[in-house]
Length: 415
Ligand SMILES: [Zn+2]
Image (cartoon, rainbow, N blue to C red; front, side):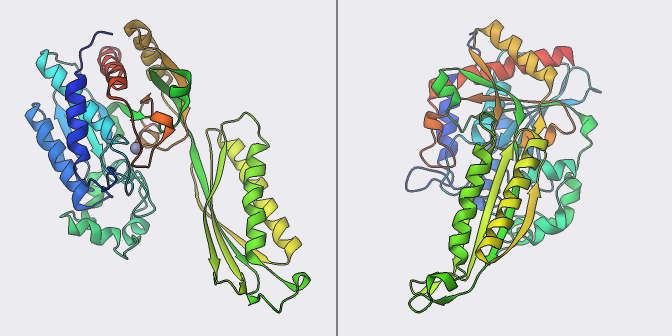
């Protein structure tokens, strides 16, 4: 380890940003397009400006800070993550990647290092889908792949539309398309993030080098049975929507587990029952199913298996089931060139790295479809994330940031 980055400075910034939207439990709430998210973006802009970068906010609310390179015509090397969080989330998810970008800019400034390529630190807005059901809003808007009509009309729990939420923080929904950038302006994208899982901790590895990012298929299933009196309806005559739904939940688990070692996962995270009272046989149940994999074809097979089982269970129980596909994302492979650069750099720096896949989605998965992209993970305590209990030891952070810096400098020479 060469020790160019400062653990103290990284810790101080993580603690500073953890104060913005701080919750009683010690977590952080900075939802997409909330005043708290904007405040964090604003502060980050000021710190990056102090580090000598020129800062701007685009039409969707992404923050970009640019440091010119020696060769003016070259596309930018971009690095960053996001500063928004889920409700009562952790202080590391997203923020760490942006703070790492800030730290690297400070190191380059201190050491008087110039690069061939211009560099940009980015803090993408609205990476988490927690508020409007759409995630990675900022990177999608930048790449022109955000379904604008649907996004702007989507509403949060309080009935506030995304368009209204944008206006409330001074952004113009009419201008979102101005955020689009030509991918040819970007030479590569690098994102440092916490693992949000427990592989690195379990195997005592310092960092993860990510090869693939899993993507999900999301299904909304409506089960329609018959609401009847729970005292007077004999068991054989019931069309209990919840009992059918319960079998469907187990079917999801069973179909995914049947794959054995594959990194496929399936979750029923939503289950609503109607009318949801003690003395009525449930007449309606709705489920939200999330199935993820790094292999698109294997994911498609699992999804088909789940759909077939749902149909069969409904038929057997005499209820109706409708299945709506809410999303069917393609897993993405990250750049082999960047993975190899990271692997070499880690070996040269003496950083113990593990090659791994990401089960969680990140802005890097959008960038990876059009530009070379790479990701580095640092360990998460007990794999906790999207929780106020999310933690990464401060001493475990510098190796990831060093590797990010070294990768950036090597790509600057090779690309
Ligand atoms: Zn994140």
